[in-house]
Image (tube, rainbow, N blue to C red; front, side, top):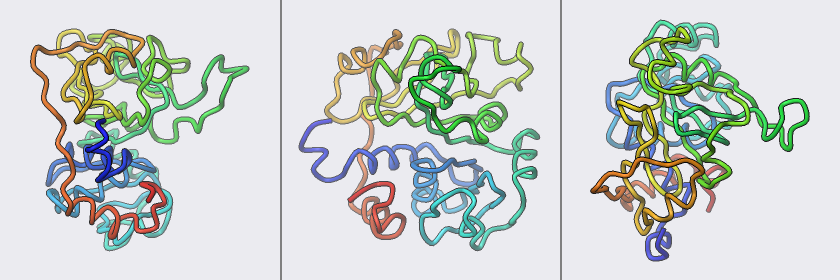
Length: 261
């Protein structure tokens, strides 16, 4: 991103804002720890006051006064409609009641498959990652999955994930259904430090939706190990307003725990 754009906000603030814009009022979102959580909170405090936020440990519909340190903190039930269990919220997901699943990823391929298990061979990995948690269940059954990859590069946008932790469109069109997953579910958007991506309806391959301010198509191509579908005309991602930044810094994460200072 151009220097004159980044002076007003940092990249984590921009990613949280971009993610929040994808969430709609009156919908439900199953959020993971980190930026997905912040994006859900920002949406709820701005354009989507009736957004139903759901946490893996059982908190449903809270009006969060500040950022929880984990999906299991008691704060995730604050003024909520239910303080239930992991079993209940996962069952709701399997029943088709969750509109959005919001996840992070270490590796993503062109079909939106996610790896958060290991880098390299599973039995002798170069790096061991946190694993699935509830991500597999969420991406399998939520209507739309949003993925944040903080550092897009050839190492994170890969031809094939080192370990298939969480299913996207698997090997392409029809593969999710063949594997027994519900139709009309799957990856919806991928957000990185460079752009926002969607998925082509015919090929299920990743396509460019919008470039972040100051980013070029060449940068997008140079930071991917697979070919991304590029439209003839591409939008530019919206930037956070001063009010959005104030909410992020003062109301949501005043200590800078996740978005930094």
